[in-house]
Length: 227
Length: 314
Image (tube, rainbow over all chains, first blue to last red; front, side):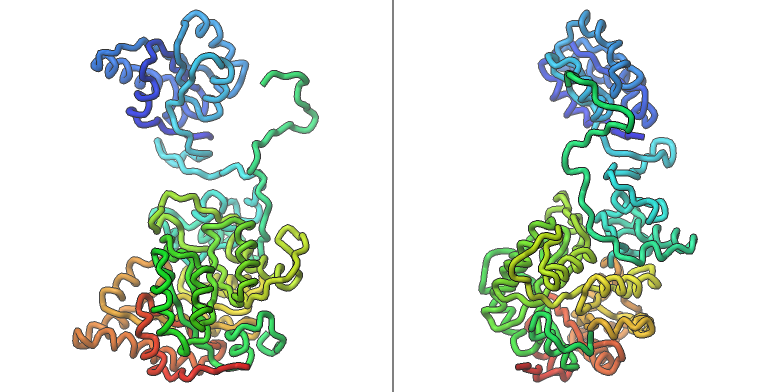
């Protein structure tokens, strides 16, 4: 899932300075699961904002509303009447970067601010602990590397590792960070597949250097679509 | 390759290795500023005592005078540079441009490295480039030199003449993988290898035995990395703080066992004993002396290691 963490409160407060009526929009999918931007987090943040602004003598009226997914127009549509009637002078989103942009795009006349920093595509290692596993590079090499991503898990993103900095199975950057290539080696050895990384992995073209669009086979972009 | 006599770059280092003589290379770290005299001062101690000098590239991820610029100053001082290039700071466009520029201005050796992670340096929040990795860099230089082609496959005019070097750390784990990694670097196009600083001789002997067994040492020149210990503190730091470094307790005990004012001499003694063994070790073709911020000791170490005078190929 996509994971995110709440921005420092001071940063959020600074973004909302001067705005008096704000709608904070949560997202019920990834960021809810990773405890960053669901209904509960919206309520907590709104309370904090209300209290500080009151103490500062600059009261704010802040409402919360969490929709199923901010990356989907179908769900965003349910905000239309709320936003029209509410006459908000700013929106805040607790969705990932994708959701924040889609919300901002739908209501282009209203300033929209992010309340979270999106931190990657991660697995749920334990309650509250999320470990990044994919950089969505568009060219998956997991078949060769025993199901461990060197682009994400190796601090240098090496395609031919491990480098000379492997330190007792950990990365040179930290004894808390396992060396991706050490793990790749161990896993492939266990599968008797070391040949897979004995050959040179040649330099590849990066497919993520321009904005990517994906249209699945059998589909096409609608004509004259307003984006 | 050892038997092949055609010169690929014509560098002094290549000539010495191809003539079967024991090579001795040194290292020079460029200054943290634009002071040319700092480079010249260090160069003085290396001239005539080594076959080629590694010019480090933002070593330990600290910003320094660029390695190609310091390499050119080294040439002016009568030294042959071994131009180090790391993958951390440049993408494939900048790398190829610098390889061409370096070659045009007389650089004939290159050492291709991944580079220490930027987190260790003075700009820990810099964006690490790592567009290609060290093995891909070796292959790219080889392609530019031997095929006259850019990485993209496009033709280049005037192939860069480089003797291609790579690093090997026999002490990083997994140990069994280190020989395979060496094989990959040779397959990519490495002409010579400089190893990580060696302190654990037993492990190194085993590494070389495996490399000999795989026939790798027939296809590449291996220069054993040596760094004399200056103090007990340095030995402990290397043991505990430097990733991928293997310092046996015996070394520390030996340094602790001498009078305080004799510790650095004892460090040099250890290094010279190692060099003596490397001279006769099958599969080792030379020594790379990394006297870190100790360049002024190089003449003394070279003399004690009995590697002087250095050969002067035609």
